[in-house]
Length: 378
Image (cartoon, rainbow, N blue to C red; front, side, top):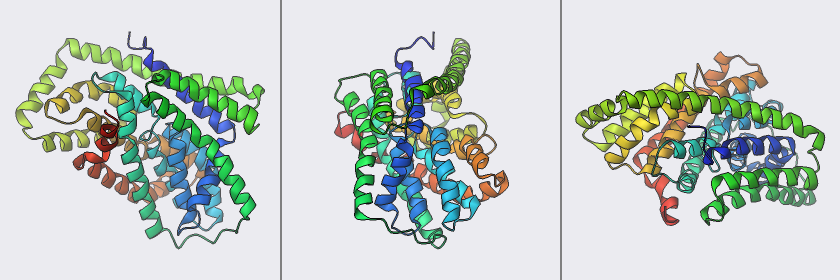
């Protein structure tokens, strides 16, 4: 019953769109485009990595796909330009946390399906501010502490810069069309995901001409495999949630929380610590499906804005992607860099603290999340 959902169809479609973009040359053009924008600043290549994740976030919404696609390009290039190899692996592991926060986002869609009274467009808009805040804080960190690593880059001609700019704009139209069409009420998120797949196919086959028809069966196969993992988790956890609801577990927890947590800030701090700890051991979507049906109604009853709480939960659990022992982005970056998890964890710990600072800011400054959705009427 949990899997029999029209809205849930957006998940495999966005996964497929991300796979098509990786194979169609869009990733390399995004990197060239962001290099043109921020590459000349202090710690330029590290900044390019972070802001390429921002752009990539608007295309795939998957942190692990971002780490894999961008890490394979950036880790050797950063090392070549003077960065230590372990730091070169830490940045593309940490920056993709931005991916599932900025729309379109697979975890946001699943969150909206898990609870009632939360709109997907509202959550999409709510993720823009926190995503940009996190990118800005990560940028400040690398400029302050990694600026001395980098050797100067070669100068490019004006013609090549114009060509890079034009080719970089083409992928940027996709998130504009996808999110814009949802906000205007023209399409549902699932229909927008269909558009994302069509756009990736069109750009890859006919405009950039790097995506071949013979590659499609393998791409579809990988997308089906990744989708099946997510849907198995959703199905199993939904059955567990039904069992807990039948035994009134959410009611018991709700009564306990309302009795002992008399202030909104107490609940927010407690639930954020809980999600951080759970994120160490559980994959983000599984943790969300187990805890959100219980905690979301408590948050609303305490006066927490539903969109604010939704983005807090997604942001919090995405930090778990870089924390051992279950940090998927950590393992993907290490598989590319081969520096050893110990060295990589030491380099990523300061970046984890930066992301924790961003979480604290958006927790206690709700307008960082709610300002844009309210401007659009959500």
